[in-house]
Image (tube, rainbow, N blue to C red; front, side):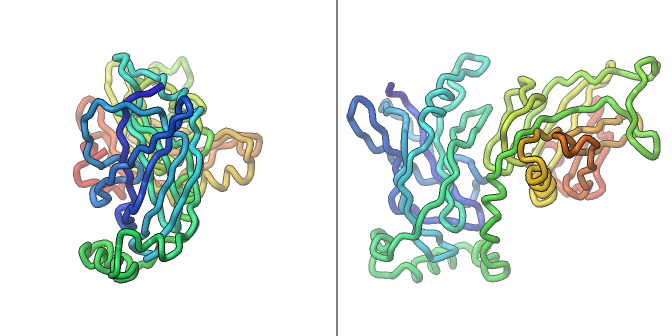
Amino acid sequence: METTYHTSDCSPRLYPVFSISSYFNTEEDEEKKDVMIAHGNYQRAEWGEATAPIIIDDKTYPLPDSVNLLWIAITEAQGYQLSAPIDKEKIEKLWQMEDEDHDPMFDTFVVGFAPYGKVAVWLRGTYKAVLLNWMQGEEANDRLAKTRVGRIGKEDFCMMQLEADEVVLNNLQENGLPPREKYDQLMQQYEYRYVPLEEYWDGEAWQEYDEEDRFYDDIDIESIEDVRHDGTFDRLCDGKLLRYHEAGCPKRLALKWKEGRANLSAYWWIDEEQLGYVLRRFASIDPTGRADLLLRLDSRQGRFELALKGGEMLQNPIDIPQEAYQLIVFKDGHQLYLSPNFTQEDGAWNW
């Protein structure tokens, strides 16, 4: 099957790369084709985001089955290469998905270059992005790395690139390279679900509502969306995030619900180091367990918290430190709650 799709590369904002040769390899009916991966603008990209310009044409290609990559990590002054298969069976299954308007769910393949030769491949659309592969490249010899930088030399070329971006250069001089395990941790996958709780805060602890409580209103979830630290997101609002799914640590979370006649919405910004630490500890204790991320929502007391439980080893919830997230909550269009550490200048508009 041949079809149309877009391509883009990306890299973390503070760790740009120079792509020397980046292609998807395809094969159908014993005919091989290479599809060039378009170069994106790392200066305005989040990890996993496609920022290469979209070129409209009528060419069609088979779906890719491997990547062939050669690049220079600017902040490391190091060339890397990778030639590896990607999960074509998963791609073909995902490619059949349609949104509520019966349009294709996905339209873009993105390759992400992380520090130390790490490579991610995503499939993205308007409402959903999924991680296909997380791979390790190998160091390329200087002859390969000089293919495009010429006589200037790899180190001098990288310094020229750094001097053209003061933010990247200053970060490298002040902080150096990130820890080697950072992006492996960002890309780690967990099996979890979101669980909005109908509980109340009694001043000392969270308690379940008595169904005979005349003040009790059912929480009716209208939508839930998230963006994750692994470069994926889910904006389908179809309730699947309330069921167990495999994904990276959440980065931003939006929840809308009703309580009686009131309309409420909450927006979280989540720190990976703190929540990711809890998830990794949980996975190490019970690697076969499923985690429940509990959303505690007491609009009457204006108290909103996160907790985690799940598996055989964690029957009782453990609180997620409130420093691990920023939160803003609205009720009927008016701000109801703002976490003490909130720093988002544009509030919910910045979600």
